[in-house]
Image 1: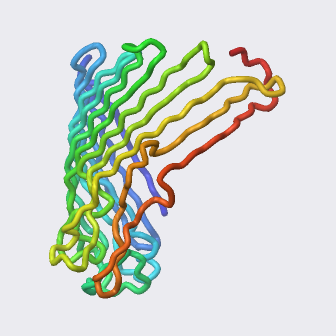
Image 2: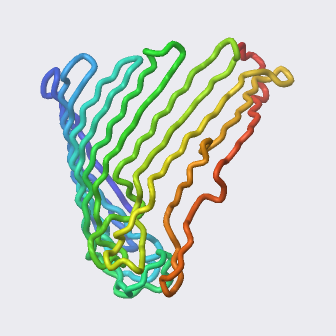
Length: 296
């Protein structure tokens, strides 16, 4: 693989900046070159805020499991369009970004009518005829000012995506894409206890899965995913060395999360794909060896 790029940043005035560049790559295995232009424009809207636009072309090699069976495949391609607003201060951060991504030249292979998993050994008809799109919205807020010794952040993502790749017979939403994703994280240091406590709540809407009894390909969805995790870090000394005792538990309420289903060959029976356990506990002791100058 050989690659090179050139990039420049131009200050048009005190509030407007343009960054533009050109990248190129050559893969001896694929026997192809690519050229990927990328550019962004940032407009300062205040002392701590800005709006930016971005455009870029991105390439990647097909997965190795496809390349070892075919030398006729080329690069997979994506074109990105982004609109971003962000506000940054010492204690607070807000960011919102809308995007659209167009996928082309995705790897496809022949559809055999039965899709139980993606661990296919022999691929037939490998080609770059796949396509798809993704459009969405990401929102992020972090606040270390409002709560004394507290720090929290909230992130939310909306994703609408469909792809016609792999052995898909039609354009469909892949199982790895959730339409709604939410994360809420809180941390606080309690000086009198020499401890930091933390909590994380995660949510994502149901994801598609293959049901051989449904004529609509990937037309079924799992239930929503929920997780509430807690952790505590206690700062102390062990043999005069800085030490952290860390305790955490995942999925404290014991939510039943289902990632998909495995169906029998005749489609009459199925087993839910679930975590190996409802909850996970972790107890760790981290000792800093060789430096006893820490003063807590």
